[in-house]
Length: 348
Image (cartoon, rainbow, N blue to C red; front, side, top):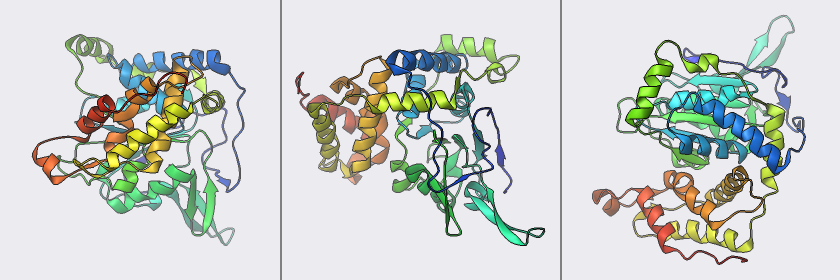
């Protein structure tokens, strides 16, 4: 492994990450908790995270939404506002296998996926799994690595599998990549390629805390990190059960069409030179299902789609040259589309 790659494991119920399953293997199924059980478990995870992340309930909720939507989360902001703290808080709240990768310019793709090494005793090559073989993979400062290294995550994020030397290994569910990145204007960063950004279900920014939250942070973080006191409140099997509940959420034809219309509008907008992909539509609906489930609803409302439109769509869009000159950000374009497009009437 290259310098900067190391792992953390908080695992009891799942098989060790060092023994990946061959292609076709599947993880164990958790019991179905129903919407009431989902809310109970989700609230425990939320409370655990909020004991570490002060004053950011919307950010914590979105992170939970992405987890239950079987997605991946990109956290982008300036250094020092708690990006890695949020990722670690979510990872430590669930009792499953966790690996952390510090992305650096000298990191290689094999440092992430693993490598086949020759075993002299057995006189054959054996696979040494990389840190991607975990339930939750925390990638710190992903855009400090080269595009070649960043691309090592493409297959595992989309297909939940890794192919090394012609052999494909499945990744145990649940599987989630939580990556942090600094703004591209900062030194030593490589912009994430469009294909990489498109695989992240949502992008969020932490933002600076308000004075009250910052004062509370000084009190809680002054002597020791609250992460040291954070214990898992849910198991990997619990999360698998919650995901099954989310998959059954009802999405009416009208809401599905609304999501399609919203995404299609980004492709024809004059201020955008790259609109959202069909994968973005799928991610938007999946996230809306999870968002509704957290409200203990078994159906999705247009409001769920509207609330998630900016974090799910904006990071996938590229503004036109004119929009850049006018300092119009994709977030503003998506917000305008949400306000302009007609909302489906109830019952459709």
